[in-house]
Length: 612
Image 1 (spheres, rainbow, N blue to C red):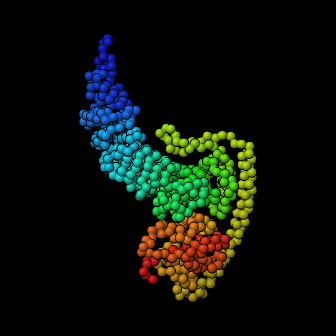
Image 2: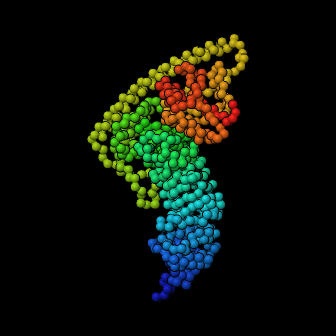
Image 3: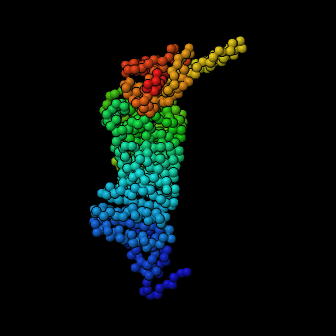
């Protein structure tokens, strides 16, 4: 029913429809919203049914009396509010409060959840980042979004099992003192500049997660558990505890023996990040070179069967390119790769490294675009171009771009995505270097094509001979006597890809070690791990410690014996055991296997102490 129009100089403001004020009220802080009741008699109680509550004290320093006034005002307002009215959102945004009396934020949160709030935001000043949220689980069937800044979060608060509708969680500058973040319904998680606990690491268990943003965490990097619904993830590691000064720009570091790495308690034998990210379709993995967590995870690297877009920075391009190649070996459907390289130190240009790119083809057969963005054309860029050219990636698909990557944080809240890039012109000398590199790539491609044709011709002849041999064997089998006993099960340890310099296998078991006429009987053993050969260059004691952690062996009750599995012939099926009990034998075996292109195969026999 339309309101009567006022005459002459009547109450024109009061003649506005209620819908106009209901639209304006959610944009006002609570005190101003309540004061609108004095503008017109019809509006006296409209504030009681506001769909949005904004409890603010931003920009003000609240002393003791100010905190008490705020508590009385908000408590009184919440009690008088119409409980039947819909509550879409509640925002608590407070500046610095220096008082023995804290604002009753936890009480307000419980009340708005009883009012079925769908969106809850709590932003405190960084001066009050020690404010602890109540260590009780939130209970709400209606809450869909939760945003928190500068607060302390503990175990029970981060268990969202009682919030079945919660889909988005945003935390900024929070102290997360919890063993686990748990939710069956959460789809979007953003954690920016948060401090995570170290002992033990916080575990993130979010099976329904679709998008993840983990930007510059402090403390220990959290463990990501299985996320089968994950589509996109952005991880940026800069100042976490998982770093080592020896790893700066490709420096050598033994994870098992290094004091810097061991002091962080990061060697648990578990994959920290990559396992949880293995179902993603798009990944951004950014880290400072000194951060070792990604390199450590590559020892247990899963297969990224859905990954199509990947962005990496300089942590992945050590001088021998092992990390980059190992990662690409586990991304069979990758379509676009972007590498962002900041300027490295001078020794990048001086150290030629020992990596031969022709020895380790990777699994990405659908790779369409490779983008390399760099500040200065150096040895890393040259080797990246050469390695993709060697593997048959069309030169037209490789984009080389000189760029300046801004490492500082964006100033807006949308912040932690990929680094912003601007493109300056490339100098004449760099153009000349690029031209020389491309000419070398063209020459290598032609040589590779000729080698492939020769290999195909050889394979066709070999297949023809094998077919003839099979026909002869089939004819002879008609006259052969039946076998007395079957041959013991053998392991096909000879890899088809011949990538023996970078890959080795571990066979693990607690059964009896038997050797028959046909070689080692592996019926009671199984292949447990495949890793990077740089681990094989460690000391024998470091390898034993790595195996004890990786296979979770209790050294108090069990021991282990390590055998190298050696082929009697250059190519064959017969394998013998060679015990390894010191670093000299271990390294001699690795060098011998690499020189002769043997696969690295290790048998780990675990036995119970006290039993023969």
